[in-house]
Length: 142
Image (tube, rainbow, N blue to C red):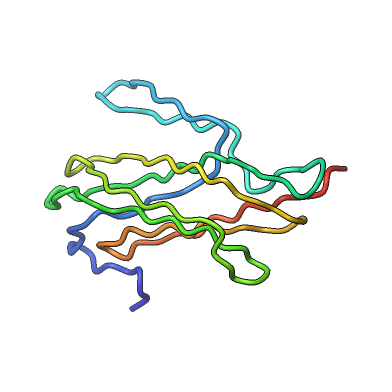
């Protein structure tokens, strides 16, 4: 079984549902009661005028806690330069999600690019091993 696979009916800890770089995030009520999450300006690359440069993107990580879980988790985000595997930043935050619900965490990195290239945000829930990698590529301006 793959490392992040979970047998059906055995989920007891917080898991990552998705992670994306976004320009903004908004919440609104919908009938039910239900909540809608509006993500605006989802991106995986950005044009840069000159190098070196620092980019401070917003990374939103959507998480869920199972009904029978306790809802506590620790999100670790490690920013790694793809070209050489060097760690260029790290964020770790403890959080709580009400069991049976979804939640989100915001991570704001300060990513330094000496030249065009990609930095990966490697997001992991420490307790469960649930993980996702989100790339962000800095491109030369056209």
